[in-house]
Length: 213
Image 1: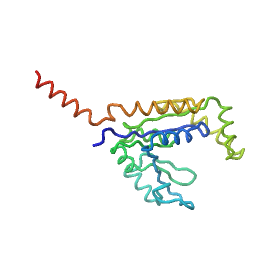
Image 2 (image 1 turned 90 degrees about the horizontal axis):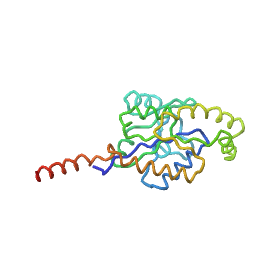
Image 3 (image 1 turned 90 degrees about the vertical axis):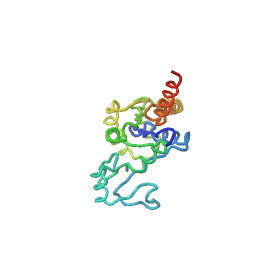
Image 4 (image 1 turned 135 degrees about the horizontal axis):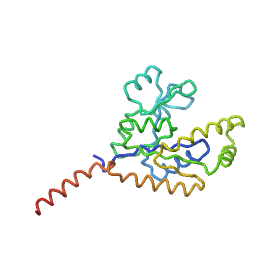
């Protein structure tokens, strides 16, 4: 038995708020932290491998796994299914390894309501302002003006669900937000439910106390 159970760390934010950068920094801070590999029904792209970028499944197989409760969360996006297989996540947290999820609020709710939800830690990243959010999207130089406008329209729907999360951080300074994120993860790792050996230790203390009585 591992000294502690792993956490299901859920990071969500509107596009451009800094979630991807913070996730990379968190994984650099702790090399033992694993990123959840999603399953998808879309075809592999050149260079992608099954079990590395995604678990590539047929639609019937994906639906069957959902019906059997083998997906922690799933969604239908642009004609394809995406989901988080429960098996690899369960193995990781039982081995004391944290698993990082990049999902939206709907995925957060599904994971929270799953049988592993008691080990979930959800964090929402807010931008300091809407103009700053747009400036960051434009500064990435990755999207057309039309795509940026669509991301901005979607951002309010995402932000409006901030109340579902355990912690909410305003990312007005990346380094400070990173430090806060590390503090949250470090503290949550010490939750009573994450420490399976505590019960045995308390039982030992009780036996020692009874021998002294």
